[in-house]
Image (cartoon, rainbow, N blue to C red; front, side, top):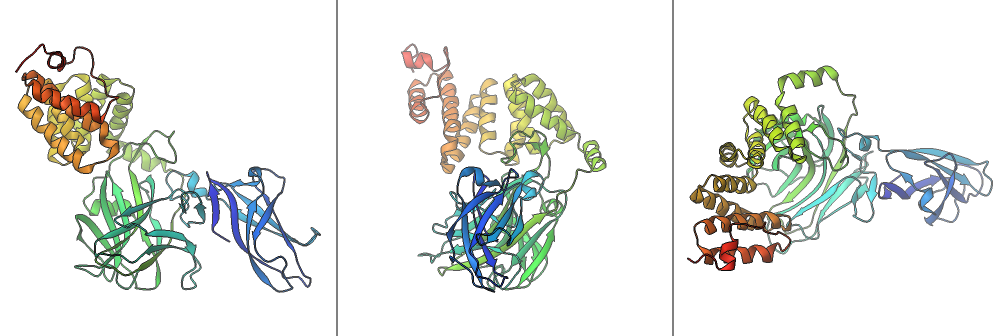
Length: 479
């Protein structure tokens, strides 16, 4: 059975095979028991009108009305009657995806549930980098393997540039190993210059870490990302148990739990190390079509271990301070946030904590502390270009015009290079900061240029009454 097609987590269409093991000709009819005890009929969209004795047929069935649909997290019971009489009937349990109800598990890891409108596995997204026309297809059986596999397809390419296609999901970094089933392509991961890269990409704190599969166990660097190679056979299915936490530490990651919102569970509020887990295929200088497969990615659903949680709380008390600081910052309790994050930095002065402290200190008015914290974040390359923007505002508040302009210009250059619409307000805020500095220097021509650019970029960003650029705009100050 499968795939099962969903809209908004409700299954409304299924594909399945029905076998007639009776001695009579059968006319299959279908019912589903989902959220209630009442069986509700489903219609046949495609399939044979009847099955002869011993014959099997492929059917596509769909809910007649929305109330006949069922939620993929709970599952349902499918019943088949072989004719007008209900005496000859059979039932099968359509198991729900229990992992999707658990924040710490890989959701829909067998890819049985498929979002029709987005054309992707439920709870997963598609990432394309220079891979126009590349697609991820619904699960199919490959090499008679019992587990269906996702199919990654690259069309022919006109040039020989790098193309990347990934299927990704977000979850907290698992405390236990995940199971991955892979089929390593013949050309994949042949170093030092592989034409095809195949494996997992784990994104933590916006930094990628690779878990690849190849002919030997090793670690190294590939395209500015560290990797761990796991030995696997080529062109055959193999299963691997991967403990991502120790692997990320081995590759140089700093794994810390912070206050983050999970896409699937927006109302949960506790410290996590959120990752993006991606099944990735990347081609390099391959103009020909490429097809690759990934099998299921699963993890066990386990109850939290109180002793392990208590031990972690004792070893990393700053994680709770960091969570509390982020919460107080969101509530605009800036002084409390500053106190929380000061304790977090005292216990663990990493760049991530320093950046959070810099934000809270800036809003609480502790400008020198904010400047110092942002400088640490900038030196470590953390949260660029926003760390530069924060540093610029801290320097401006301290009267350091040269330092402010330098930081604002760095932030502007990095934001412009990203050219993301989501960064529009950040660019406007940087332009405002630069205008404030030039206004204090009485350089009104430059002030008016910056303000005009800012207002064209973000008309909804209003300058407060009595702002430093007002004298230049009203002609009260001349250069």
